Length: 293
Image 1 (cartoon, rainbow, N blue to C red):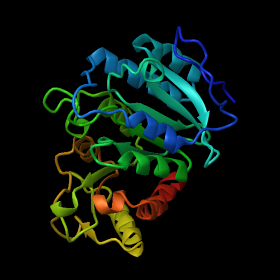
Image 2 (image 1 turned 90 degrees about the vertical axis):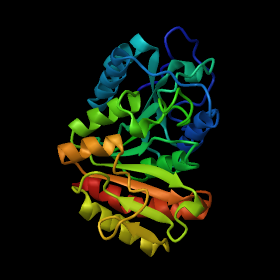
Image 3 (image 1 turned 30 degrees about the vertical axis):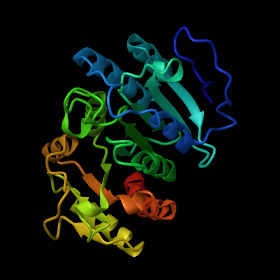
Image 4 (image 1 turned 90 degrees about the horizontal axis):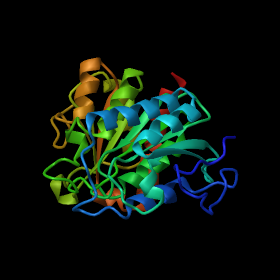
């Protein structure tokens, strides 16, 4: 097991060892709770996006030392941790400032299962803004081997204009990393939330975004959510609001003929812990199929 690695120049912090484990969900929500609606985001340069993405690619290839060297060029780091709930070991790619003075640039984090070949993605573009999607993402990640979680690093309104709305931008670390994962032909599910009054007759919207490659996956997930008692709007069967047709990651998936799901959940579902577990179980049926394919 690789030891935890501190960012360059930082003294080793006092914290549990990877063997002792950390609660992955709590670790992620401790990070996102500091997000404000204004400030805390800087648009990365093209070279910065490339460097982070190359570092993540090295993690995916199993070269953690190479990843650490590459990522240190932009003050990012890689830490190995064990999730106390699932027992799975993950690599956490994160801004070094997240662990020191909190001077977050808003570029997000990536979590990679180190115990299985990467085989699917869970994407969280609007943590905090789409309340509890970060919590759901953590539960989905730990539920099935081979997962990669890409988590945005700022509230969607934190930047100038829509700069931090990474679901609708292509100049973010979030988009660049997902693009790399899609080049590897990994299917993905992107998690969103809507206000109850926006679409009151439904609890969830399941869409394939701009493409149609994941219709069979959409049917599986819609069925599982329905069996959990949710009212689901299925875009393969009818026209639905909030279907994510302009989602940038979905547009790339459509162009490359990749499986991509865009899932919207009502706030009443996301803020009910039991219902959040129901959704996790429904998604797990799909991610297990992806991991086994």
